[in-house]
Image (cartoon, rainbow over all chains, first blue to last red; front, top):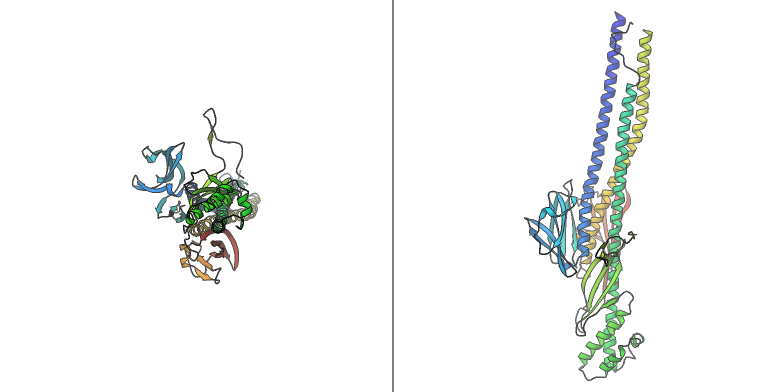
Length: 154
Length: 207
Length: 150
Protein backbone atom coordinates (compact mmCIF):
# COMPACT_ATOMS: atom_id res chain seq x y z
CA UNK A 1 0.00 0.00 0.00
CA UNK A 2 2.73 2.41 0.95
CA UNK A 3 4.66 1.66 -2.18
CA UNK A 4 1.60 2.25 -4.29
CA UNK A 5 0.83 5.75 -2.92
CA UNK A 6 4.49 6.65 -3.07
CA UNK A 7 4.46 5.40 -6.61
CA UNK A 8 1.41 7.43 -7.62
CA UNK A 9 2.68 10.50 -5.77
CA UNK A 10 5.92 10.26 -7.69
CA UNK A 11 4.00 9.96 -10.94
CA UNK A 12 1.90 13.00 -10.19
CA UNK A 13 4.95 14.94 -9.13
CA UNK A 14 6.83 14.07 -12.28
CA UNK A 15 3.85 14.86 -14.41
CA UNK A 16 3.41 18.19 -12.64
CA UNK A 17 7.06 19.01 -13.16
CA UNK A 18 6.85 18.14 -16.80
CA UNK A 19 3.71 20.22 -17.24
CA UNK A 20 5.40 23.14 -15.51
CA UNK A 21 8.34 22.76 -17.85
CA UNK A 22 6.06 22.59 -20.88
CA UNK A 23 4.03 25.62 -19.82
CA UNK A 24 7.09 27.71 -19.05
CA UNK A 25 8.69 26.85 -22.38
CA UNK A 26 5.45 27.84 -24.07
CA UNK A 27 5.56 31.15 -22.25
CA UNK A 28 9.14 31.67 -23.33
CA UNK A 29 8.24 31.11 -26.95
CA UNK A 30 5.36 33.54 -26.63
CA UNK A 31 7.59 36.14 -24.99
CA UNK A 32 10.17 35.66 -27.71
CA UNK A 33 7.52 36.13 -30.38
CA UNK A 34 6.24 39.28 -28.70
CA UNK A 35 9.71 40.76 -28.42
CA UNK A 36 10.29 40.00 -32.09
CA UNK A 37 7.00 41.63 -33.01
CA UNK A 38 7.87 44.69 -30.93
CA UNK A 39 11.24 45.13 -32.62
CA UNK A 40 9.84 44.63 -36.10
CA UNK A 41 6.92 47.00 -35.50
CA UNK A 42 9.24 49.73 -34.31
CA UNK A 43 11.44 49.23 -37.34
CA UNK A 44 8.49 49.26 -39.71
CA UNK A 45 7.16 52.53 -38.32
CA UNK A 46 10.60 54.11 -38.58
CA UNK A 47 11.00 52.81 -42.13
CA UNK A 48 7.65 54.19 -43.26
CA UNK A 49 8.36 57.61 -41.83
CA UNK A 50 11.84 57.76 -43.30
CA UNK A 51 10.94 56.46 -46.77
CA UNK A 52 7.95 58.72 -47.24
CA UNK A 53 9.75 61.87 -46.11
CA UNK A 54 12.88 61.17 -48.10
CA UNK A 55 10.90 60.21 -51.22
CA UNK A 56 8.80 63.35 -51.21
CA UNK A 57 11.75 65.58 -50.34
CA UNK A 58 13.75 64.14 -53.24
CA UNK A 59 10.84 64.78 -55.61
CA UNK A 60 10.50 68.35 -54.40
CA UNK A 61 14.24 69.01 -54.63
CA UNK A 62 14.37 67.67 -58.18
CA UNK A 63 11.67 70.07 -59.24
CA UNK A 64 11.68 73.79 -59.70
CA UNK A 65 10.25 75.63 -56.72
CA UNK A 66 7.66 77.36 -58.86
CA UNK A 67 6.26 74.06 -60.16
CA UNK A 68 5.36 72.79 -56.70
CA UNK A 69 1.87 73.53 -55.43
CA UNK A 70 -0.81 72.07 -53.20
CA UNK A 71 -4.28 71.36 -54.48
CA UNK A 72 -7.27 69.98 -52.71
CA UNK A 73 -8.35 66.97 -54.76
CA UNK A 74 -10.86 64.34 -53.71
CA UNK A 75 -11.24 66.20 -50.46
CA UNK A 76 -7.64 65.95 -49.37
CA UNK A 77 -4.40 67.82 -49.71
CA UNK A 78 -2.39 66.69 -52.70
CA UNK A 79 1.10 67.77 -53.61
CA UNK A 80 1.27 68.62 -57.29
CA UNK A 81 4.56 68.91 -59.15
CA UNK A 82 4.41 70.13 -62.73
CA UNK A 83 6.97 69.11 -65.29
CA UNK A 84 7.48 69.42 -69.00
CA UNK A 85 8.79 66.58 -71.10
CA UNK A 86 9.14 67.03 -74.85
CA UNK A 87 7.01 70.16 -74.60
CA UNK A 88 4.11 68.22 -73.06
CA UNK A 89 2.89 69.16 -69.62
CA UNK A 90 2.83 66.41 -67.03
CA UNK A 91 1.78 66.44 -63.40
CA UNK A 92 3.01 64.34 -60.51
CA UNK A 93 0.42 63.99 -57.77
CA UNK A 94 1.50 62.77 -54.33
CA UNK A 95 -1.26 62.01 -51.85
CA UNK A 96 -2.55 59.67 -49.17
CA UNK A 97 -5.12 57.10 -50.26
CA UNK A 98 -6.33 53.98 -48.47
CA UNK A 99 -3.52 54.06 -45.97
CA UNK A 100 -0.81 54.33 -48.60
CA UNK A 101 1.28 57.20 -49.89
CA UNK A 102 0.50 57.21 -53.61
CA UNK A 103 2.06 58.87 -56.60
CA UNK A 104 0.32 59.49 -59.88
CA UNK A 105 2.26 60.70 -62.90
CA UNK A 106 0.04 61.67 -65.77
CA UNK A 107 -0.56 64.30 -68.44
CA UNK A 108 -1.72 67.60 -67.09
CA UNK A 109 -4.98 67.38 -69.03
CA UNK A 110 -6.05 64.05 -67.56
CA UNK A 111 -8.42 63.92 -64.61
CA UNK A 112 -7.08 62.98 -61.23
CA UNK A 113 -8.14 59.47 -60.26
CA UNK A 114 -6.95 58.59 -56.79
CA UNK A 115 -7.04 54.83 -57.37
CA UNK A 116 -4.74 54.78 -60.38
CA UNK A 117 -1.63 55.91 -58.56
CA UNK A 118 1.34 53.78 -57.53
CA UNK A 119 1.72 52.78 -53.92
CA UNK A 120 4.90 54.05 -52.34
CA UNK A 121 4.73 53.16 -48.67
CA UNK A 122 2.00 52.56 -46.09
CA UNK A 123 1.48 55.57 -43.85
CA UNK A 124 -1.28 56.68 -41.55
CA UNK A 125 -1.26 60.44 -41.98
CA UNK A 126 0.06 62.89 -44.55
CA UNK A 127 -0.34 66.65 -44.18
CA UNK A 128 1.22 69.33 -46.34
CA UNK A 129 1.18 73.09 -46.01
CA UNK A 130 2.88 75.62 -48.21
CA UNK A 131 3.93 79.17 -47.47
CA UNK A 132 5.68 81.49 -49.88
CA UNK A 133 8.99 79.70 -49.92
CA UNK A 134 8.56 76.77 -47.58
CA UNK A 135 6.81 73.43 -47.89
CA UNK A 136 5.99 71.64 -44.67
CA UNK A 137 5.36 67.88 -44.68
CA UNK A 138 4.02 65.90 -41.78
CA UNK A 139 3.74 62.13 -41.88
CA UNK A 140 3.12 59.43 -39.35
CA UNK A 141 3.75 55.73 -39.74
CA UNK A 142 2.07 52.79 -38.10
CA UNK A 143 2.96 54.03 -34.62
CA UNK A 144 0.94 57.22 -35.20
CA UNK A 145 3.82 59.50 -34.18
CA UNK A 146 3.96 62.60 -36.32
CA UNK A 147 7.26 63.69 -37.80
CA UNK A 148 7.52 66.83 -39.84
CA UNK A 149 10.03 68.06 -42.40
CA UNK A 150 10.18 71.59 -43.74
CA UNK A 151 11.66 72.10 -47.18
CA UNK A 152 12.64 75.41 -48.70
CA UNK A 153 11.41 75.91 -52.24
CA UNK A 154 13.74 77.63 -54.68
CA UNK B 1 4.19 -6.82 -15.63
CA UNK B 2 3.92 -4.99 -12.42
CA UNK B 3 3.81 -1.49 -13.86
CA UNK B 4 0.91 -2.17 -16.27
CA UNK B 5 -1.29 0.70 -15.14
CA UNK B 6 1.46 3.18 -14.36
CA UNK B 7 2.06 6.27 -16.43
CA UNK B 8 5.28 5.94 -18.29
CA UNK B 9 7.03 9.09 -19.24
CA UNK B 10 9.59 8.33 -21.87
CA UNK B 11 13.01 9.77 -21.67
CA UNK B 12 13.48 12.48 -24.23
CA UNK B 13 10.13 14.26 -24.20
CA UNK B 14 11.58 17.19 -22.32
CA UNK B 15 14.59 17.22 -24.61
CA UNK B 16 12.34 17.46 -27.64
CA UNK B 17 10.39 20.28 -26.04
CA UNK B 18 13.57 22.09 -25.18
CA UNK B 19 14.93 21.70 -28.69
CA UNK B 20 11.72 23.10 -30.09
CA UNK B 21 11.79 26.11 -27.79
CA UNK B 22 15.46 26.82 -28.42
CA UNK B 23 14.87 26.56 -32.15
CA UNK B 24 11.98 28.99 -32.00
CA UNK B 25 13.84 31.53 -29.91
CA UNK B 26 16.97 31.29 -32.04
CA UNK B 27 14.92 31.82 -35.19
CA UNK B 28 13.27 34.91 -33.73
CA UNK B 29 16.59 36.24 -32.52
CA UNK B 30 18.37 35.75 -35.81
CA UNK B 31 15.49 37.16 -37.83
CA UNK B 32 15.19 40.27 -35.71
CA UNK B 33 18.94 40.83 -35.75
CA UNK B 34 19.15 40.49 -39.52
CA UNK B 35 16.20 42.83 -40.10
CA UNK B 36 17.56 45.37 -37.64
CA UNK B 37 20.91 45.25 -39.41
CA UNK B 38 19.34 45.82 -42.82
CA UNK B 39 17.29 48.70 -41.43
CA UNK B 40 20.37 50.29 -39.88
CA UNK B 41 22.16 50.05 -43.22
CA UNK B 42 19.29 51.79 -45.02
CA UNK B 43 19.23 54.48 -42.34
CA UNK B 44 22.96 55.09 -42.73
CA UNK B 45 22.65 55.27 -46.49
CA UNK B 46 19.82 57.78 -46.22
CA UNK B 47 21.84 59.86 -43.76
CA UNK B 48 24.79 59.85 -46.14
CA UNK B 49 22.64 60.94 -49.03
CA UNK B 50 21.27 63.87 -47.05
CA UNK B 51 24.77 64.82 -45.94
CA UNK B 52 26.00 64.77 -49.54
CA UNK B 53 23.07 66.88 -50.67
CA UNK B 54 23.86 69.59 -48.15
CA UNK B 55 27.56 69.41 -48.99
CA UNK B 56 26.53 70.09 -52.60
CA UNK B 57 24.28 72.91 -51.46
CA UNK B 58 27.10 74.47 -49.41
CA UNK B 59 29.44 74.19 -52.39
CA UNK B 60 26.80 75.90 -54.54
CA UNK B 61 26.58 78.79 -52.07
CA UNK B 62 30.36 79.11 -52.04
CA UNK B 63 30.25 79.36 -55.82
CA UNK B 64 27.67 82.11 -55.46
CA UNK B 65 30.06 83.93 -53.19
CA UNK B 66 32.69 83.67 -55.89
CA UNK B 67 30.19 84.92 -58.46
CA UNK B 68 29.35 87.90 -56.28
CA UNK B 69 32.97 88.91 -55.75
CA UNK B 70 33.60 88.47 -59.49
CA UNK B 71 30.65 90.71 -60.30
CA UNK B 72 31.87 93.31 -57.83
CA UNK B 73 35.28 93.28 -59.50
CA UNK B 74 33.63 93.52 -62.94
CA UNK B 75 31.62 96.52 -61.74
CA UNK B 76 34.69 98.29 -60.37
CA UNK B 77 36.60 97.46 -63.54
CA UNK B 78 33.80 98.73 -65.77
CA UNK B 79 33.67 102.04 -63.94
CA UNK B 80 37.44 102.35 -64.07
CA UNK B 81 37.59 101.51 -67.76
CA UNK B 82 34.90 104.02 -68.67
CA UNK B 83 36.61 106.63 -66.52
CA UNK B 84 40.03 106.06 -68.04
CA UNK B 85 38.91 105.38 -71.55
CA UNK B 86 40.90 102.16 -71.74
CA UNK B 87 41.05 98.70 -70.20
CA UNK B 88 44.69 98.82 -69.07
CA UNK B 89 44.28 99.85 -65.46
CA UNK B 90 41.54 97.34 -64.65
CA UNK B 91 42.13 94.50 -62.23
CA UNK B 92 41.56 91.69 -64.72
CA UNK B 93 42.83 93.35 -67.86
CA UNK B 94 44.85 90.28 -68.83
CA UNK B 95 41.70 88.18 -68.75
CA UNK B 96 39.68 90.76 -70.72
CA UNK B 97 42.29 91.09 -73.38
CA UNK B 98 42.33 87.34 -73.93
CA UNK B 99 38.75 87.45 -75.17
CA UNK B 100 37.73 88.50 -78.66
CA UNK B 101 34.94 90.64 -77.28
CA UNK B 102 37.52 93.12 -76.01
CA UNK B 103 37.36 94.93 -79.32
CA UNK B 104 33.66 95.67 -79.05
CA UNK B 105 34.24 96.76 -75.46
CA UNK B 106 36.95 99.18 -76.50
CA UNK B 107 34.62 100.52 -79.18
CA UNK B 108 31.93 101.15 -76.59
CA UNK B 109 34.38 102.88 -74.27
CA UNK B 110 35.54 105.15 -77.03
CA UNK B 111 32.02 105.70 -78.29
CA UNK B 112 29.62 108.53 -77.74
CA UNK B 113 27.03 106.94 -75.49
CA UNK B 114 26.23 108.52 -72.12
CA UNK B 115 28.44 107.33 -69.25
CA UNK B 116 25.66 105.33 -67.60
CA UNK B 117 24.98 103.42 -70.81
CA UNK B 118 28.68 102.77 -71.34
CA UNK B 119 29.04 101.39 -67.81
CA UNK B 120 26.04 99.17 -68.36
CA UNK B 121 27.34 97.61 -71.57
CA UNK B 122 30.94 97.33 -70.42
CA UNK B 123 29.84 95.75 -67.12
CA UNK B 124 27.77 93.22 -69.04
CA UNK B 125 30.72 92.27 -71.23
CA UNK B 126 33.19 92.15 -68.38
CA UNK B 127 30.94 89.99 -66.24
CA UNK B 128 30.35 87.65 -69.15
CA UNK B 129 34.09 87.37 -69.82
CA UNK B 130 35.00 86.76 -66.19
CA UNK B 131 32.20 84.35 -65.39
CA UNK B 132 32.69 82.18 -68.44
CA UNK B 133 36.33 81.75 -67.49
CA UNK B 134 35.40 80.16 -64.14
CA UNK B 135 35.56 76.39 -64.63
CA UNK B 136 32.16 74.75 -64.52
CA UNK B 137 30.17 77.81 -65.46
CA UNK B 138 28.26 77.67 -68.73
CA UNK B 139 26.32 80.48 -70.29
CA UNK B 140 22.88 79.95 -71.76
CA UNK B 141 22.54 81.49 -75.17
CA UNK B 142 20.50 84.62 -75.01
CA UNK B 143 19.92 87.75 -77.01
CA UNK B 144 21.87 90.90 -76.47
CA UNK B 145 19.24 92.82 -74.64
CA UNK B 146 18.44 90.17 -72.03
CA UNK B 147 20.34 89.66 -68.79
CA UNK B 148 23.06 87.01 -68.91
CA UNK B 149 21.99 83.53 -67.78
CA UNK B 150 24.48 81.10 -66.30
CA UNK B 151 24.34 77.52 -65.10
CA UNK B 152 26.71 75.56 -62.89
CA UNK B 153 26.57 72.20 -61.14
CA UNK B 154 27.93 70.99 -57.82
CA UNK B 155 28.32 67.40 -56.74
CA UNK B 156 25.58 66.20 -54.41
CA UNK B 157 26.83 62.64 -54.01
CA UNK B 158 25.65 59.21 -55.25
CA UNK B 159 24.99 60.13 -58.84
CA UNK B 160 23.23 63.40 -58.16
CA UNK B 161 24.23 66.94 -58.96
CA UNK B 162 22.77 70.21 -57.82
CA UNK B 163 22.19 72.51 -60.77
CA UNK B 164 21.99 76.23 -60.06
CA UNK B 165 20.90 78.79 -62.62
CA UNK B 166 21.25 82.50 -62.08
CA UNK B 167 20.99 85.71 -64.04
CA UNK B 168 23.32 88.67 -63.83
CA UNK B 169 21.27 91.76 -63.13
CA UNK B 170 21.96 94.98 -65.04
CA UNK B 171 24.50 97.47 -63.78
CA UNK B 172 23.14 99.53 -60.96
CA UNK B 173 20.69 97.01 -59.53
CA UNK B 174 20.95 96.52 -55.79
CA UNK B 175 21.00 92.74 -56.31
CA UNK B 176 23.94 91.88 -58.47
CA UNK B 177 22.55 88.48 -59.39
CA UNK B 178 19.31 86.54 -59.04
CA UNK B 179 19.13 82.79 -58.58
CA UNK B 180 16.42 81.52 -60.89
CA UNK B 181 16.49 77.82 -60.25
CA UNK B 182 18.14 75.30 -57.97
CA UNK B 183 17.37 71.69 -58.48
CA UNK B 184 18.69 68.21 -58.00
CA UNK B 185 19.44 66.36 -61.20
CA UNK B 186 20.30 62.75 -61.81
CA UNK B 187 23.41 61.94 -63.79
CA UNK B 188 21.71 59.23 -65.70
CA UNK B 189 18.70 60.38 -67.62
CA UNK B 190 16.43 58.08 -69.50
CA UNK B 191 16.57 58.89 -73.18
CA UNK B 192 15.10 57.44 -76.31
CA UNK B 193 17.27 55.52 -78.68
CA UNK B 194 16.89 55.78 -82.42
CA UNK B 195 14.47 52.88 -82.65
CA UNK B 196 12.12 54.61 -80.25
CA UNK B 197 13.03 52.28 -77.36
CA UNK B 198 13.72 53.66 -73.94
CA UNK B 199 17.21 52.85 -72.75
CA UNK B 200 16.72 52.20 -69.09
CA UNK B 201 20.09 51.08 -67.84
CA UNK B 202 23.48 51.90 -69.20
CA UNK B 203 25.33 49.62 -66.85
CA UNK B 204 26.57 52.10 -64.25
CA UNK B 205 25.50 51.84 -60.66
CA UNK B 206 25.42 54.70 -58.20
CA UNK B 207 28.68 54.99 -56.33
CA UNK C 1 10.70 -0.32 -6.98
CA UNK C 2 14.26 -0.22 -8.06
CA UNK C 3 13.06 -0.06 -11.65
CA UNK C 4 10.71 2.82 -11.02
CA UNK C 5 13.40 4.57 -9.01
CA UNK C 6 15.71 4.40 -11.95
CA UNK C 7 12.89 5.48 -14.22
CA UNK C 8 12.17 8.62 -12.30
CA UNK C 9 15.77 9.27 -11.56
CA UNK C 10 16.61 9.34 -15.21
CA UNK C 11 13.75 11.72 -15.82
CA UNK C 12 15.00 14.10 -13.17
CA UNK C 13 18.55 13.91 -14.38
CA UNK C 14 17.38 14.46 -17.89
CA UNK C 15 15.24 17.44 -17.00
CA UNK C 16 18.06 18.99 -15.00
CA UNK C 17 20.45 18.60 -17.91
CA UNK C 18 17.83 19.98 -20.27
CA UNK C 19 17.26 23.04 -18.12
CA UNK C 20 21.01 23.58 -17.88
CA UNK C 21 21.49 23.42 -21.61
CA UNK C 22 18.40 25.50 -22.13
CA UNK C 23 19.57 28.28 -19.88
CA UNK C 24 22.90 28.44 -21.68
CA UNK C 25 21.23 28.73 -25.10
CA UNK C 26 18.67 31.22 -23.83
CA UNK C 27 21.49 33.38 -22.50
CA UNK C 28 23.01 33.44 -25.97
CA UNK C 29 19.69 34.07 -27.70
CA UNK C 30 18.88 36.85 -25.26
CA UNK C 31 22.09 38.59 -26.25
CA UNK C 32 20.94 38.32 -29.86
CA UNK C 33 17.64 39.97 -29.00
CA UNK C 34 19.34 42.72 -27.07
CA UNK C 35 21.73 43.37 -29.95
CA UNK C 36 18.82 43.49 -32.41
CA UNK C 37 16.94 45.92 -30.17
CA UNK C 38 20.01 48.12 -29.92
CA UNK C 39 20.42 48.19 -33.68
CA UNK C 40 16.77 49.06 -34.17
CA UNK C 41 17.07 51.85 -31.61
CA UNK C 42 20.21 53.15 -33.31
CA UNK C 43 18.53 53.13 -36.70
CA UNK C 44 15.47 54.93 -35.36
CA UNK C 45 17.66 57.50 -33.58
CA UNK C 46 19.63 58.17 -36.75
CA UNK C 47 16.50 58.57 -38.86
CA UNK C 48 14.92 61.10 -36.53
CA UNK C 49 18.25 62.90 -36.09
CA UNK C 50 18.53 63.24 -39.86
CA UNK C 51 15.03 64.73 -40.03
CA UNK C 52 15.75 67.25 -37.26
CA UNK C 53 19.06 68.26 -38.82
CA UNK C 54 17.41 68.58 -42.22
CA UNK C 55 14.77 70.89 -40.80
CA UNK C 56 17.40 73.27 -39.45
CA UNK C 57 19.55 73.02 -42.58
CA UNK C 58 16.61 73.87 -44.83
CA UNK C 59 15.78 76.89 -42.71
CA UNK C 60 19.38 78.06 -43.00
CA UNK C 61 19.03 77.84 -46.77
CA UNK C 62 16.13 80.27 -46.66
CA UNK C 63 17.70 82.89 -44.35
CA UNK C 64 17.13 86.44 -45.51
CA UNK C 65 19.61 88.37 -43.37
CA UNK C 66 22.92 87.45 -41.81
CA UNK C 67 21.67 87.91 -38.28
CA UNK C 68 18.42 86.07 -38.72
CA UNK C 69 18.00 82.81 -36.90
CA UNK C 70 16.36 79.71 -38.26
CA UNK C 71 12.91 79.39 -36.73
CA UNK C 72 13.73 76.04 -35.18
CA UNK C 73 16.33 77.69 -32.99
CA UNK C 74 13.90 80.14 -31.41
CA UNK C 75 13.58 77.93 -28.37
CA UNK C 76 17.26 77.05 -28.20
CA UNK C 77 19.68 77.93 -25.45
CA UNK C 78 22.27 80.37 -26.76
CA UNK C 79 25.89 80.27 -25.74
CA UNK C 80 29.12 81.34 -27.37
CA UNK C 81 29.65 84.93 -28.42
CA UNK C 82 29.82 87.43 -31.21
CA UNK C 83 30.62 85.91 -34.54
CA UNK C 84 30.06 82.25 -33.71
CA UNK C 85 26.94 81.92 -31.63
CA UNK C 86 26.12 78.46 -30.47
CA UNK C 87 22.65 77.08 -29.81
CA UNK C 88 21.49 73.90 -28.09
CA UNK C 89 18.14 72.18 -27.94
CA UNK C 90 17.60 69.19 -25.68
CA UNK C 91 15.22 66.34 -26.42
CA UNK C 92 13.98 63.50 -24.23
CA UNK C 93 13.87 59.91 -25.41
CA UNK C 94 10.60 60.47 -27.28
CA UNK C 95 12.17 63.40 -29.12
CA UNK C 96 10.02 65.96 -27.34
CA UNK C 97 11.76 69.20 -26.42
CA UNK C 98 12.87 69.25 -22.82
CA UNK C 99 15.02 71.46 -20.65
CA UNK C 100 16.03 68.94 -18.00
CA UNK C 101 17.88 65.68 -18.42
CA UNK C 102 17.92 65.53 -22.19
CA UNK C 103 18.71 62.26 -23.93
CA UNK C 104 19.50 63.89 -27.27
CA UNK C 105 21.05 67.29 -27.89
CA UNK C 106 21.04 69.30 -31.11
CA UNK C 107 24.00 71.69 -31.25
CA UNK C 108 24.08 74.37 -33.92
CA UNK C 109 27.03 76.69 -34.46
CA UNK C 110 26.44 79.58 -36.84
CA UNK C 111 29.67 80.79 -38.42
CA UNK C 112 29.47 84.11 -40.16
CA UNK C 113 32.32 85.03 -42.50
CA UNK C 114 32.21 88.46 -44.06
CA UNK C 115 33.67 89.04 -47.50
CA UNK C 116 33.65 92.15 -49.66
CA UNK C 117 30.44 91.19 -51.37
CA UNK C 118 28.42 89.92 -48.46
CA UNK C 119 28.27 87.47 -45.60
CA UNK C 120 28.58 83.70 -45.78
CA UNK C 121 26.61 82.02 -43.03
CA UNK C 122 27.63 78.42 -42.42
CA UNK C 123 25.64 76.42 -39.88
CA UNK C 124 27.36 73.44 -38.32
CA UNK C 125 24.60 71.16 -37.06
CA UNK C 126 25.46 68.21 -34.87
CA UNK C 127 23.16 65.84 -33.05
CA UNK C 128 24.48 63.91 -30.07
CA UNK C 129 23.11 61.26 -27.77
CA UNK C 130 23.92 61.59 -24.08
CA UNK C 131 24.52 58.21 -22.58
CA UNK C 132 25.33 58.06 -18.87
CA UNK C 133 27.50 61.19 -19.06
CA UNK C 134 29.17 60.12 -22.30
CA UNK C 135 28.32 61.88 -25.55
CA UNK C 136 27.99 59.97 -28.77
CA UNK C 137 27.74 61.81 -32.06
CA UNK C 138 24.72 60.68 -34.06
CA UNK C 139 24.82 62.96 -37.09
CA UNK C 140 26.56 66.03 -38.46
CA UNK C 141 25.45 68.36 -41.20
CA UNK C 142 26.75 71.58 -42.72
CA UNK C 143 24.48 74.05 -44.42
CA UNK C 144 25.47 77.39 -45.89
CA UNK C 145 23.81 80.50 -47.21
CA UNK C 146 25.50 83.38 -48.95
CA UNK C 147 23.87 86.74 -48.30
CA UNK C 148 25.15 89.51 -50.56
CA UNK C 149 25.33 93.12 -49.43
CA UNK C 150 23.09 95.46 -51.36
